[in-house]
Structure formats: C-alpha cells, structure tokens
Amino acid sequence: MPICKKCGVEIEEGLKFCPLCKTPLGEFTEPAETEEIQSRKLIPEISRKSRSWLWELVTFLSFAGFIVIFAVDFAYGTNITWSRFPLVSIIFVWLSFTFIFRLKTRTYLQIILETLVLLILLWVLDLFIMAKPWFFRLALPIVLCLSFLTILNTFFFRKTRVSVFGILASSMISVGIFLLFLDFILHNYMEGKLLLSWSIVAFACIIPLVVFLLYFRKRLKKKGIDLQKFFHI
Image 1 (cartoon, rainbow, N blue to C red):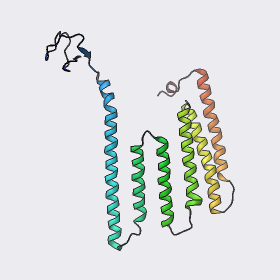
Image 2: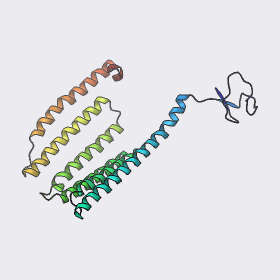
Image 3: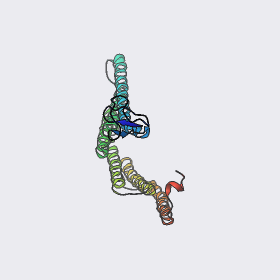
Image 4: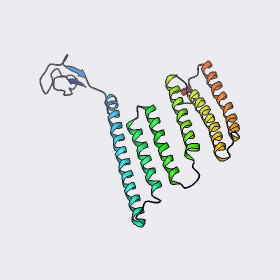
C-alpha cells in the first residue's frame, strides 16, 4: 500500500485523499516498504543487540566464576594456590570474547591481540608450573608461527578472488607448513636436535590432496560448471 508523505499513514488502494490529513494523493505518496526490506533493515540492529547481550552474559559469567573460584581457594587456605590456573584462564576467555565482539570488522588487529593475550596466558602458566621452562623455546615460536600463517591466509583470501577449492588448498598447505615447524620445534625442545621426522610424512600426504583440489577445480571451470549447482547448494 502507498504511504502519505505528509503524515506517514498507509493508504488503501483506490483512495484519492489521505484519510487522516485529507491531502490529495499523487506526488505526496510513496510506495510502502515490503516486509522483506523492513526485515533487512532490522537484521543489523538485531545482530548488534544480540552481540551486545551475549558479551554482557559472558562478562557476568566470567566475573561470577572468578569471584567464586577466588573465594573458595582463599577461604580454605587464606592463600591463592590452585585457583591461579582457572583465574588466568577466565581472564583469557573473557578477553578473547571481548576482542571477537568488539573488533568484528578489524580482523588483523583481532588476530594480533588474540595472539598477544594467548602468549601472556602461556607465559603466566609457565611461571606457575614448577618444571622445565617451556614458554620461550616451545610455546612462543609455535603461537607466532600459527598467528603468522593465519594473517597470511587472511590477507591472501581477501586480496584474491580465490575459489572454495583454492581456500581449501591454501589452508591445507598452511597446515602442512605448520606441522613441519611444529615437528622441528618439538625435536629441538625435547631432544636438542634440529631435524624433521613425522611431519615429512604428513606434508607428503597433503600435497596430493592439494593437487587434486586444484585439478578438480580446473576441470570444473573448463567445463563451465558452477560449484553451487554441482554440489546442489
């Protein structure tokens, strides 16, 4: 139904005057928005409200859990002992959710901050655990490698119009590189040797899958087959 531009009232079909302000129809009317258009306008607002509500819920649960765990540990020993581990973990989870909710459109900054928070968590845990230090020789290089590969893939996916098969192939190659690096770091930390073993087999298994994905994508593209129609999506 058309809408009167002067008073905003919906007007039934066939009327020549607005029933409220008696304004003649014609140039003073505009088509009413469909329910689909109105629902599309509401989606971003609902999404923002849902994220805000979910973040508030996570904040409340994190705060409540932090207080309860701290009180239980302190009440039975007048000291903070075992609760150090869950307390720092709660802080890490809350910060991670905060970055996800507040930095939704700033992907690179979100990845960097998530990496920084994870490194701080692992460093604190390394201080708490009375054993052989493992943060600088084990956790730090592994997390930095994983973060670097994530940023590299994100940049590649955004700058190139790569297909689904290209995304899968790139992700699998990144996984293979990470396994090689992980194997190298583990051998260096545990045995003090600079060598590779099981990761070579894992990477060798990944290569045929990557080649198959790229070849399959090329055949589909040559035949002009749409991926969505091919997989009935």
